[in-house]
Length: 419
Image 1 (cartoon, rainbow, N blue to C red):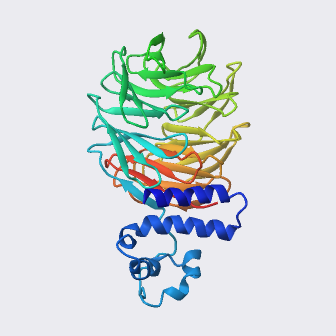
Image 2: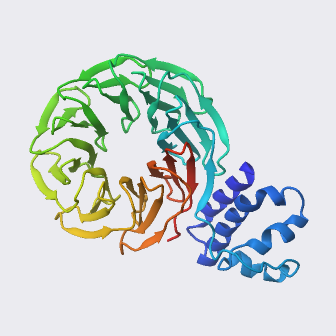
């Protein structure tokens, strides 16, 4: 099935620029058909006609093309109108999944769990490829290097481990933190790794050799670490109500962004690196000029803690998720509130834009992932595959898939609504 699904994906990707909408829809249906019905049709050719074709959703082009083959079996009720957005679920972790990440080429998914392991999955089929074992406690964060060759994992065992992404071989363990490692990130050029810890520091490591280069100190406790898009700066969010900016090359502290009235939960750079957004426990998002450190505007409207913030790919909009069960969209330049996305029945824990900026995905403690049209704010779909909190969420690099991790020990993959 791996070969078939990858072939469909390659054809779809290569042909999409010149293909008609009809051909694109047919290729999309072909991939979904193969994934949905692989088990029965792999048993024999006749199952294509008896166990698969009759159950193609009503509105799909593939059903229209092969309508003359549907006479042998009739579905009296329960036929879906569209493909189920959930593509597959990846089972194997024995405890909560804390972090998920796509490889840069979108072929693999890495997931870190409270079961002390990192698992690697085939992103097109959901097949489990390998399990990375070695951490002594929960894995809180996973990240691929920009070239996809390595994986970094941070753990409550106070260490960062580096793995070969292809073979799963453990390469080195980065030791030095005195408490749990809460976040790991590669620099944009892949030369450095930053790790944030509950020991109030961020450590910078040489990604190739694992050598500890420097320690960034000054916070009470680090909650979030972000590299600027060009890799020249590092922003650190903290419980001390500040954001610190450091020179990533020299490790010199450049400035401290003050003015927050509560804990800083996360920080994010705009795509061009000109602005920084910080989410706060005081229910607001603060926007800063990354060059001058001047506070530009405060986004007010949430009635509870802001847990997640993301810039659109073109930097024109910001989306924020909150414990008030809502997602909000803002004009990144003016700070004007544009829309409130309602529908979650519990805390929103994660929000993200699709790579082309047309969709927003939000994950919640209510166990659902909701997909929204970023332009119109219309709710598109709510795939239901998790029974507990959705802890992490990310789009594939090409935007064709979304993967999510949950407290129900499952990693799931879905197709967002097509543009």
